[in-house]
Image 1 (cartoon, rainbow, N blue to C red):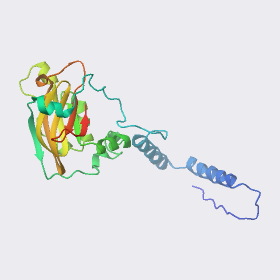
Image 2: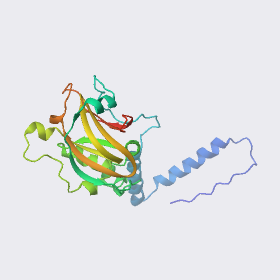
Image 3: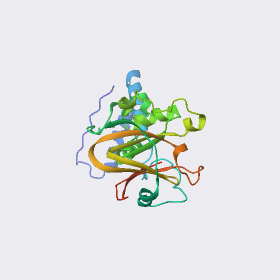
Image 4: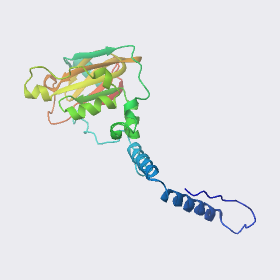
Length: 239
């Protein structure tokens, strides 16, 4: 690789500084063109990792950085459902009150699994929330879900699917994860599921519920899950 020395002087004040910068860039590109095969491979590897980390162009993005279902047509205040909604049966999978939420997991790195969970807007989305939900029947989606929420090890050997269930109940199963909250009850009202909880500094709980047990207004619409206080104030929501 060639080495160039560029001297900046004030002897020619007519030379624009932008021209000097352009000259430096041309010299660097010349060096890159002469890189060894190993260097070229490393440059390509880093370039691909960068693509997995951020959007190709700078842009503002809303949360979530992906499409989500529309809110239910008939919306009720959480407090109304707390007062008159029905109890929703749920099965607790894990309750770890001392669990500390990690700021980073090794498998979020862009070099792991082709950067499957490393995209920064997604990482920020999951960091912003406390309530997470996902259907459990689609194994590939569920695999991404447990890694995105940072609970792959905790949920690795946990049975989430209903046993000896018919097709509708098998497909209707959801996993619900509440972080930094102590769940007190789970209620159903229309296309809303209300998870009543007390905010905490630590801990997470994981449980399952089923669409077949919900009192849906419209089965064709998505179910909105809401994490709320005992007074009905919303802490977070998820589809």
